[in-house]
Length: 105
Image (cartoon, rainbow, N blue to C red; front, side):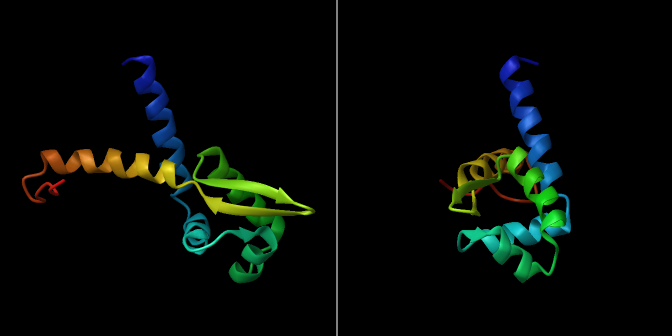
């Protein structure tokens, strides 16, 4: 396995790990349509900021979300390019499946 494969493998593991928690999936769903500050995420999810911070850290380490600071607030948004990498990885399985036909380009 080459160095690029190891990096890609580590990235995939981090992404799938980050997506393995229901609360983190909920964060992803909330960020689908708009950027939100941490306080808005806490309010909508009904969780404390300390609990949410742990999950946001996981999502950031997997590069699935980005953050930016504006004044004293931190705003979060999806890193769509990382989701594209996941989509491309999963799409490779369609090529080998006799059940699911490959999607035309």
